[in-house]
Amino acid sequence: MHVTIADLMQYTEWERGKWIRLFGKTPSALGLSVGPNRDDRFNTVGDWVRHIFAAEIRYVERLSGRPLTEIAGMRNDNVEELFEFGKRTRKELRRFLENFPDTEWDVPREMQILNFIVKATPNKIVVHIVMHEIRHWAQIATLLRLSGFRGDFGDDFIVSPVMGGDWRPV
Image (cartoon, rainbow, N blue to C red; front, side, top):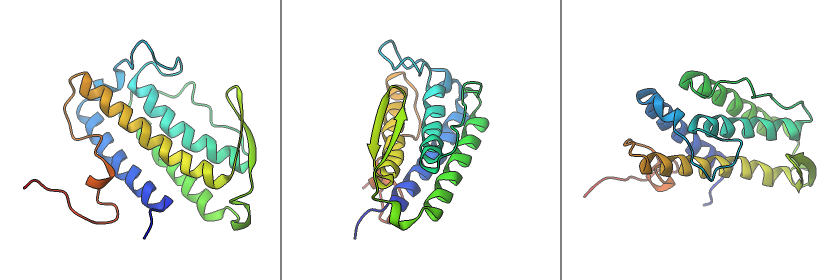
């Protein structure tokens, strides 16, 4: 048996559910600074969350030859709006996966991202979309823990219900 993109997407959807509950209880966490050594595109946790979802839709748009979604005016401090955007981006990713031609998955594509030219197969790009999200949620979880926030967030894949199993104290 092996892990599939569907498994990783299920994991990130489980994670999103945990995060929306946490931010719903403590919306101030979205305003937390990500620190002085950050990427200048992200000042707050809310910026980071918006970036997770924006990257998902923008990769799909690049692979589909569509214009990129503009996020500059999008709020980063409203839990419901952010996660509604996330639902839309995931829906677009699912639609892309269902409709992308099988013969194109391993054909490298070249695209500009910021000041870089990236050449990768759609298959690699889709793996990156999901891994990118997983990595950023872990970073956000660490930042919140270090900032004194408590909550049910940032659990590892082994703890999730994905692919079955159980996790309980002895």
